[in-house]
Amino acid sequence: MAAPSDEQSATTTPASDRRERVALALVVYAVLLAQTLVYPGVDLLTAEFGGRGVAGPTLFLAVEFAAFALFAGPWGTLSDRLGERRRLVAVAAGGGAAGYLALAAVAGGGPSFLAALLLRGIQGAMTVGALSLAISALADRSGGNGRNMGVAGIAIGLGTATGAPLGGQLFEIGATVPLYAAAGLLGIAAAGSLAIPDRPPAPTRATGDGPTADAATDAAAGDDGSHPDHGGLTALLSGLRDRRELAVPYAFAFADRLVAGFFALVGTLYFREAFGLGPGATGLLLAAFFAPFALLQYPFGLLSDRIGRVVPIGAGSAVFGLAVIAVGFAPSVPAVAATMVVVGVLGALMAPATLALVVDLGGEDGRGAAVAGFNAAGSLGFLAGSLVGGAVAAEFGFAAAFVVAGGSEFLLAVATLPALVRLGRRSGRTAVFSGGD
Image (cartoon, rainbow, N blue to C red; front, top):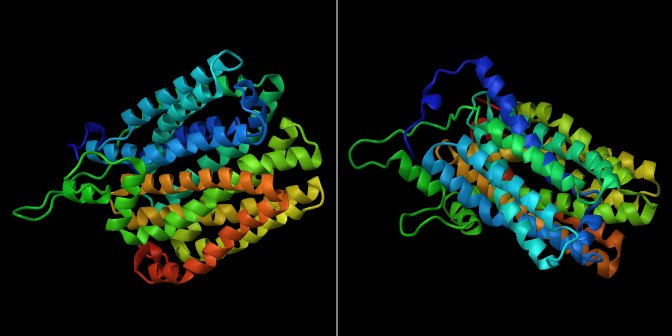
């Protein structure tokens, strides 16, 4: 890891930590808001590129999250090695903004749908760097992993909560308007990130023949020195090899984001088809989930610092899966909205605890790579939710798709409970019933 920067070595105070925490949360918020603007009318947008039916929206969403999975690892590894976040966040957010502008420029024109998918992949590869490294920078702050990841959760939740209804209204103006808005938001995030000091852990080199902090960082990133930087998926697998216990929260990240990917595509199409809703109304219905999901993450993150990670993750995920199934069988729009609120509350309970567990297990020198692995696992889940959900809905109908999405979350919670409890028996923040310090 590179030597600490001047900003990193500066003395911090609780007030400065709060300011930096808020600033980083705003960066995360801007990235998620930009990302979710396209969800309520993704079928209308892909039609502008020549994508038709269920396949067009499915591929458009899937390509971005395939890029997320492939490139989250390299961003995290590079950040840990350089010992800085802010410049990389600015570069990644700026690249994401350029990607959205390029998509808007080719919409309705001559380029094929495959060309639009290529641009979408480049945009996703850049956007995930801004998201993952901003979350890693939040984890660098003092105050407890549950608190910091709760702040990240609020930013993520508020971004998606406001992105869905705002995106629906922008689609009412024009199919490409959300793309221009997303580019502007990422441009703001790029500029704002440069004002936030870097505070990654300072390297502590051992004397003699002992290991160095750089070696610990390389191990966390899955780099044994025999080859150059890994791709995202290779880094994820290498990280699991060195820290096998990360497989538990990564599995939950996969399942949680599978449900998110399912709602982004299948849920949107279901609400439009089953209840005859337009993009604006669909965005409001999605917000019934995202609003409580956003507002409750910070208090639930603090709760996980006090009672541990096991109960919020294990119990929350099991009931969450059942609630997702219930959405698909709700008979009316008000009933769907009420059930979506329940899903949002349960999602807020488990999300910050899961991410905080990743930070707990990643260690100071490897948290950038650990968070990157979390994002890669989640991106694979989102990809699976879009592809599998779309395929099941097309072949067997929407009800079956809801059962598959919610049932996978429930079964995962049951199957991994013994491993989760074993992690919970450790001392510190992963304790089952005691947060500890």
